[in-house]
Image (cartoon, rainbow, N blue to C red):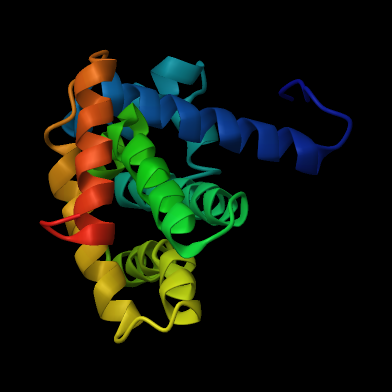
Length: 193
């Protein structure tokens, strides 16, 4: 019988699942999405494949779990960023800065790469619903400010943030600060601040 590394079996399983999801993200970040298989994950964490099947029955189930696990944390970070400041402009700027931090983070590219792979329709629907929730803090700010069509505006702002993220350079703080400032200025004030 395997050794339990927590006070309860439920806690042990939760810890093991966390380790598996983290290891799966690490594999994708270091070796690419195609390298993520149940066999590679089992090797990485030192589990037998039959033991791994207690957590995931297929690669698709593993991919869906990794993607679904990451999205609520991003949503929490975005909501906290908006709550941490006062005023519409400060809230939008906090949202944008946090969104760019998330996009620039290695886990975001891993999740995007994984999402591009074939997943069952139910998993895609669940992931899409979680992703849509990421815009909720921004939609709320725009709604409270009386901005017309707040959901549409939030989608457009998100698109601008994704475009800005493609211009970020790892480790180049001055350049990245310029990108964030330009994006924030563009969103809040248009072409003529």
